[in-house]
Length: 454
Ligand SMILES: Cc1cc2nc3c(=O)[nH]c(=O)nc-3n(C[C@H](O)[C@H](O)[C@H](O)COP(=O)(O)OP(=O)(O)OC[C@H]3O[C@@H](n4cnc5c(N)ncnc54)[C@H](O)[C@@H]3O)c2cc1C
Image (cartoon, rainbow, N blue to C red):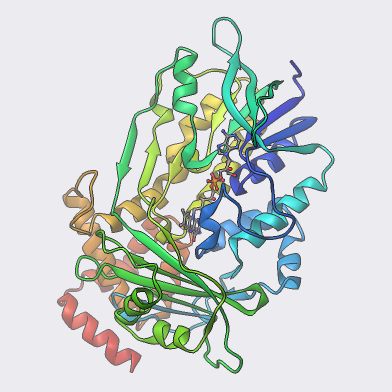
């Protein structure tokens, strides 16, 4: 076994970012990926979600730029619009249209396929990383007492029966929601983690369009949020590279958007405001409509296990997957990669996996609270109910959203929190709390906000 090498299982975005960080601590990093990668920025079988709208939150954008210096200029050159949130975006929420203002918070409006392609190309330019494509990791290898993971076994895909083993001092599982880590751990004599699953039964239907010539609006990205519990429907239209729009319609509470032409358009027309429907009515579709319904929040509580092997860590969707409607998965994955980096920096290799898993709850906390807190508003959501404090927070946030329509300071704070730049507590600053709690019914506040908007 080489003490100088690490393995990452899964060559998607989180696996690629993890590999980048591991190059600072290991002489060689091997990524095992069951897919073969397309030559260009195209979707592939292992990442079906790439056909859908992928929002890169500002925090995620910052981390990716730090890990891969120069990537932002490359995305710019590839035509991915730079977007100032609040100014280049039109967002319709509980309080009506959010105010247009300069937030100074930027991100890239980029397709998932291009982002992953650019990250992969930068990573591979580093000679210390190799990717084994077309190989599926199928078990962990450990010493006789199971206390130390020493590598993986893997199986060739595409008809060959070839199997191989690969040794490493650290194995990182970034194989997404399909991760088999619970089963692998059990085979080595460990417990499987407890799981929390909160499912709002939300479905996606997405289609790509050519942006019509002369289409003249101030926004590049348009988001129409659902308004639970009354309205479970929402939609987003993002302008990405090559003058394309990616449009995703979403319905929770099992109100799944249809994937046939007429049903898709009817669903778009049923949104609370007509902007998205009006835009796509004039646009040329670039292909079929894709559906997706595996959107439950799913958290595996590895941090609760009393025993954990040396040389192993689980991160990304493999450990914690979110309802994608809140656009958090890539960013929380990036934050976990930063946490893995700080665990390696501060404590070195011994015990790194255990330290990392113990810190995981702190990294996912805010995103998990926001995603599940929103999902609990839908009557059909399964996986528990919000307690009284959570319901009070929901009411507070409702009022906050109504008031921000007339207050750029509140709007900016809201953007910072939802982009994971600030913790949710930032919405409870005394100046905001005073405004929110000052009273008045939600309806009165909403009316005031709409007047301010007019
Ligand atoms: C419909 C949808 C929309 C989304 N929208 C957003 C969004 O707007 N913003 C956002 O930030 N996030 C979004 N997400 C979440 C985001 O896609 C993920 O969080 C992100 O891809 C990071 O996941 P990951 O790298 O952990 O796993 P994945 O992206 O799922 O990748 C896992 C990789 O592991 C490979 N693999 C699996 N098993 C094995 C094995 N045994 N051996 C070898 N390789 C294996 C797979 O082929 C794949 O390449 C969305 C997700 C979905 C489903």
